[in-house]
Figure 1: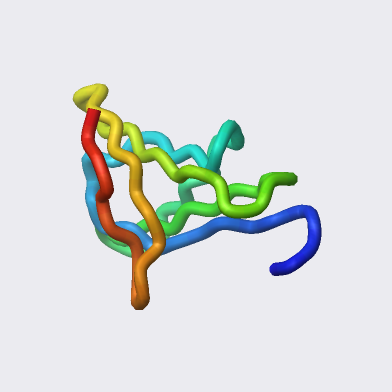
Figure 2: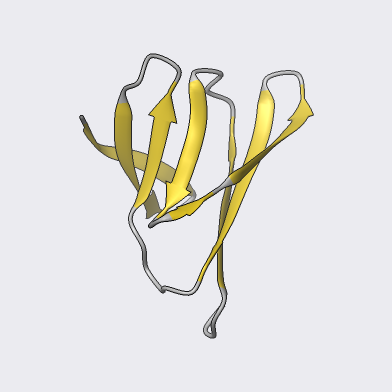
Length: 75
């Protein structure tokens, strides 16, 4: 998308992920099948930082790479 709003989304299978944020926007996590889930967030900002929060409280910043997403830093 090249115009506001921007939609960020990806499929996930890490069952420890409990929350996802695209910038300040909280993502909606949808259960698809088994451990497969999908998240999406709508933001008015382009190229935001995506953060996942795991059930143990660990936060990870992830970035888009060709073919998916990858962890950049854990904090």
